[in-house]
Length: 126
Image (cartoon, rainbow, N blue to C red; front, top):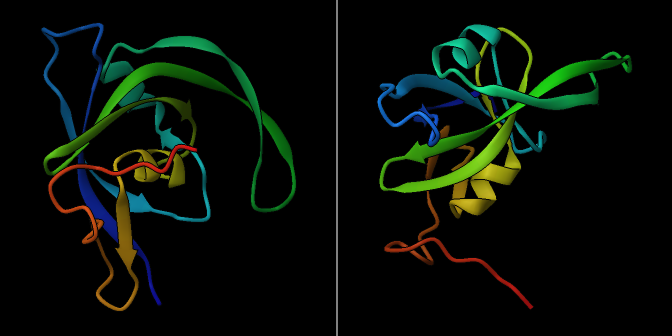
């Protein structure tokens, strides 16, 4: 299938005078969280809220900073999440994608708004 990338905007809602950071993020439906490199956390002046233990691809468990809040914006949709400060590129996981009601088109390698709810994000809450 190949990798899917999307341009997203990240900002710190606690620091409204800071400019947002626009990044090309790896879209990963198999990951849950938003992951950002340390230099992005520094640019956004994010506070580390705690440490989280994560399991990486080779099975090792490591502790990484959990920072936030982060406002994530994709086109006309946005959400607020925490971010794992880890890795060398921004990774957009399933939690922020679900919150913004986004879907991945594997054949087109594209992230889009859910066509069933084109005007507003939809969430099922029962």
